[in-house]
Every structure is written in C-alpha cells, then in structure tokens.
Image 1 (tube, rainbow, N blue to C red):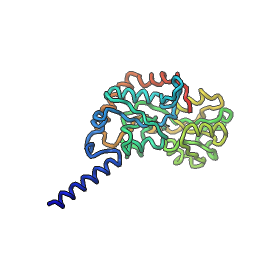
Image 2: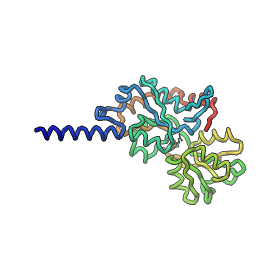
Image 3: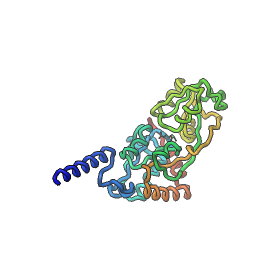
Amino acid sequence: MKLKKMMTATVALVAGLSLAACGGSSKDAGKDPLEKIKEKGSLVVATSPDYAPFEFQTLVEGKNKVVGADILLAEKLAEQLGVKLEVSSMNFDNVLNSVQNGKADIAIAGLSVSEERLKVFDFSDAYYKVKDMLLVKQDAVKSFGSIESLAGKKVAVQKGTTQETYAKEELKDSSIVSLTQVGEAINELKSGQVDAVLLDSPVALGYTSQNKDLAVADIAFPETEANTKAIAMSKDSGELKTEIDKIIKGLVESGEYENYLKEVAKYTAVE
Ligand code: ARG
C-alpha cells in the first residue's frame, strides 16, 4: 500500500513539474485561459514593437515607451477584463512561441491569420485588414511594375512573418533575405544591400512618409485570409476567445480601432 502511495505521489509530482515547465501549473490544468487571467489579475501580451503604426517604440518625456494601435487594443482588453496589462516585447519570430509555451496569454503583433497558424493557435475575429506591399528605393520604383519584375532581385522579409512564407513559396526567382528586425531590412534597403522589403501596407506607407528616398511599388500581391489582423491565443481558448471577440466587435463597429491608428500617428518611431 505504501509503495502505491509513493508511486501516485511521484506521478503527481512529475505531472506538476512538466506542466510548470511549459508555463502552466497543475492547479491550472483544465481551466479556461480567461479564468487563469482573471485569477492572476494580469493579461500578458506578447508583441514585437518594430511595426508602426501597430506596435513601435517612441520617446515619451525622454523615456522609451511601446505604443501603437495594437497596444491601445491591448489596454482596452485589459480594462474590459478588469486586469492589469503586461506588454512583453520580443523579436517577432518569438511572439507566437511565447503564447505556445505559456509565457504570454495572447499575442497582438500585427498578426495575420493563416491556415498554418490556425493549426496551432486560436485567433480572435479580425480587427483590421491590410495588403502586402513592396517598399523600394524611390529612384528604382519604375523598375518594379509586376511580381515578375522581382526576378533576380534581393527581397527582404521579417523572420517568422506571412510575408516570409509567401516570398519563399512564390518568389522563386528572387533572393529572399530573412531578417529578425524590420529596422534591419529598412537599413539594408536604404544602403542598397537589398532591392525591396515586403511588408504589411500601413507599415510600408509609414516608411514612405518618413523617408523621401523610399516608395511603394505599384504591384498588386494576391489577397488571402492572411491579410486580416487578429489576436493569437492558445488552442481551445473557449471563453477567452468569446470575450475578446465581443470586445473586438465593439471596437470595429464603432470605428474605435481606426481611431487608435489616427491617435498613434502623433508619435515618431525610434529604433
Ligand atoms: N502581418 C505579418 C504576420 O503576421 C507581419 C507581422 C509583423 N509584426 C511585427 N510586430 N513585426 O506575419
């Protein structure tokens, strides 16, 4: 009998340790993520603040601050859920991993919905829609008139993005340069190390307004469901997804998310 008790205790201990290792705990097992968030009193949001106007760094009263339309969205979610917001900044190619390993509750990072991501994560309803856009040097814009014109060119994309997936699958005649930070890609474009950068449309347009030597190419990339922005959370997030979808519905129908984009236009991004 004593041996059986010892075996049961050992199994429980191992189960608890393995759960803790992936960000959970045995007491949380089976709980809806919404219940866990409310119990701990905080909403941890993973983001990659190199993507104005969605999430970017700026100086506010001399201090570095993460701002953006997605950050205002995150603040709204935390307020509606009655918890504290914790913004966890990291490189984009770590954002989804941090949700998967339990270090973050959700990810809001200008994330596009894709079939590949839907296999691993739940996504909220869409809160915004974008297109893919090619950022090039102003003095070379006329040579980029079609997808075929990218043959033989060096096209930079951010690691882990839907643009990286698209470029590697569809731009077979181009040299795809995957970089961790968007800022790196812009620097390489400006210095001539790459010929173009593939980005979400508002981000590309933001760079052309801040840099007179940059322009967007007149190329229409195929529009897919990957052009809608949504919030990522762990699979089977049930009540959390329901609650977030309710909040997003309100923000979209009232035009408040559009107002967030206008509100953050007053900030200038710093690297
Ligand atoms: N929309 C693209 C994607 O979901 C790019 C997002 C990049 N976001 C960022 N904060 N750097 O893959």
